[in-house]
Image: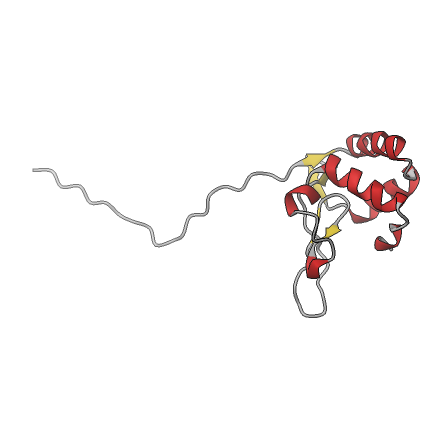
Amino acid sequence: MLSVLLLTSTIPVEPPQAPPRTLSYEEVVSIISEVSERTGANKADMIRVFECESPKVKLNGKVLYDTHGQSTHIRKDGTRENSWGIFQINLADNAHPEVLKEQAQDPLWSAEWTANQFVAGRAWQWP
Protein backbone atom coordinates (compact mmCIF):
# COMPACT_ATOMS: atom_id res chain seq x y z
CA MET A 1 0.00 0.00 0.00
CA LEU A 2 1.29 3.42 -0.98
CA SER A 3 0.91 6.29 1.49
CA VAL A 4 0.92 9.88 0.41
CA LEU A 5 2.05 12.52 2.83
CA LEU A 6 0.70 15.97 2.18
CA LEU A 7 2.63 18.87 3.59
CA THR A 8 0.97 22.17 4.21
CA SER A 9 2.89 25.36 4.40
CA THR A 10 2.49 27.72 7.31
CA ILE A 11 3.91 30.56 5.23
CA PRO A 12 1.08 32.77 4.01
CA VAL A 13 0.98 33.03 0.26
CA GLU A 14 -0.24 36.36 -1.04
CA PRO A 15 -1.98 36.47 -4.39
CA PRO A 16 0.04 38.21 -7.07
CA GLN A 17 -0.74 41.89 -7.26
CA ALA A 18 -1.82 43.39 -10.54
CA PRO A 19 0.67 45.94 -11.79
CA PRO A 20 -0.41 49.55 -11.35
CA ARG A 21 -2.16 51.06 -14.29
CA THR A 22 0.39 53.26 -15.95
CA LEU A 23 0.46 55.88 -18.68
CA SER A 24 3.32 57.50 -20.51
CA TYR A 25 3.99 61.20 -20.19
CA GLU A 26 2.63 61.73 -23.70
CA GLU A 27 -0.61 59.87 -22.88
CA VAL A 28 -1.25 62.00 -19.81
CA VAL A 29 -0.46 65.24 -21.66
CA SER A 30 -2.87 64.15 -24.40
CA ILE A 31 -5.65 63.70 -21.82
CA ILE A 32 -4.84 67.06 -20.25
CA SER A 33 -4.80 68.76 -23.67
CA GLU A 34 -8.22 67.42 -24.59
CA VAL A 35 -9.75 68.29 -21.22
CA SER A 36 -8.21 71.75 -20.95
CA GLU A 37 -9.35 72.65 -24.46
CA ARG A 38 -12.90 71.56 -23.67
CA THR A 39 -13.12 73.20 -20.22
CA GLY A 40 -10.96 76.28 -20.68
CA ALA A 41 -8.60 75.26 -17.88
CA ASN A 42 -4.99 76.40 -18.21
CA LYS A 43 -3.16 73.49 -19.87
CA ALA A 44 0.30 74.54 -18.68
CA ASP A 45 -0.88 74.76 -15.06
CA MET A 46 -2.54 71.35 -15.27
CA ILE A 47 0.64 69.83 -16.70
CA ARG A 48 2.68 71.47 -13.92
CA VAL A 49 0.40 69.94 -11.28
CA PHE A 50 0.49 66.52 -12.94
CA GLU A 51 4.30 66.59 -13.20
CA CYS A 52 4.59 67.51 -9.53
CA GLU A 53 1.87 65.29 -8.07
CA SER A 54 1.70 62.11 -10.13
CA PRO A 55 3.23 58.94 -8.67
CA LYS A 56 5.95 57.64 -10.95
CA VAL A 57 7.08 54.07 -11.61
CA LYS A 58 9.99 52.82 -13.65
CA LEU A 59 9.32 49.98 -16.05
CA ASN A 60 12.03 48.69 -18.38
CA GLY A 61 14.00 51.89 -17.85
CA LYS A 62 11.08 54.13 -18.79
CA VAL A 63 9.29 56.47 -16.37
CA LEU A 64 5.54 55.91 -16.35
CA TYR A 65 2.78 57.50 -14.30
CA ASP A 66 0.73 55.39 -11.90
CA THR A 67 -2.90 56.39 -12.31
CA HIS A 68 -3.90 54.40 -9.22
CA GLY A 69 -1.04 55.60 -7.01
CA GLN A 70 -1.39 56.93 -3.51
CA SER A 71 0.61 59.84 -2.19
CA THR A 72 3.88 58.97 -0.51
CA HIS A 73 3.58 61.98 1.81
CA ILE A 74 3.50 61.01 5.49
CA ARG A 75 1.41 63.28 7.69
CA LYS A 76 2.45 64.46 11.16
CA ASP A 77 0.40 61.68 12.77
CA GLY A 78 2.49 59.09 10.90
CA THR A 79 -0.22 58.08 8.42
CA ARG A 80 0.10 58.21 4.67
CA GLU A 81 -1.80 61.02 2.98
CA ASN A 82 -5.10 59.87 1.47
CA SER A 83 -4.52 61.38 -1.99
CA TRP A 84 -4.87 59.36 -5.20
CA GLY A 85 -4.23 59.31 -8.93
CA ILE A 86 -2.27 61.45 -11.32
CA PHE A 87 -3.58 64.66 -9.74
CA GLN A 88 -3.41 63.33 -6.16
CA ILE A 89 -6.98 64.26 -5.27
CA ASN A 90 -7.14 64.41 -1.48
CA LEU A 91 -9.93 62.29 0.00
CA ALA A 92 -8.90 62.68 3.66
CA ASP A 93 -10.93 64.47 6.28
CA ASN A 94 -13.80 64.94 3.83
CA ALA A 95 -11.68 67.27 1.72
CA HIS A 96 -13.65 66.17 -1.33
CA PRO A 97 -16.56 63.98 -0.19
CA GLU A 98 -18.00 64.06 -3.71
CA VAL A 99 -15.00 62.14 -5.09
CA LEU A 100 -14.65 58.37 -4.86
CA LYS A 101 -11.21 56.77 -4.79
CA GLU A 102 -12.00 54.98 -8.07
CA GLN A 103 -12.81 58.33 -9.68
CA ALA A 104 -9.56 59.89 -8.45
CA GLN A 105 -7.74 56.92 -9.99
CA ASP A 106 -9.42 57.31 -13.38
CA PRO A 107 -7.13 59.58 -15.43
CA LEU A 108 -9.82 61.08 -17.64
CA TRP A 109 -12.27 61.63 -14.78
CA SER A 110 -9.63 63.14 -12.51
CA ALA A 111 -8.35 65.42 -15.28
CA GLU A 112 -11.89 66.64 -15.89
CA TRP A 113 -12.49 67.18 -12.16
CA THR A 114 -9.16 68.97 -11.75
CA ALA A 115 -9.85 71.19 -14.77
CA ASN A 116 -13.20 72.17 -13.27
CA GLN A 117 -11.45 73.02 -9.99
CA PHE A 118 -9.02 75.25 -11.90
CA VAL A 119 -11.80 77.00 -13.82
CA ALA A 120 -13.69 77.58 -10.55
CA GLY A 121 -10.63 79.31 -9.05
CA ARG A 122 -9.60 76.45 -6.77
CA ALA A 123 -6.14 75.73 -8.23
CA TRP A 124 -4.76 76.77 -4.82
CA GLN A 125 -5.48 73.18 -3.68
CA TRP A 126 -2.27 72.18 -5.48
CA PRO A 127 0.47 74.44 -4.07
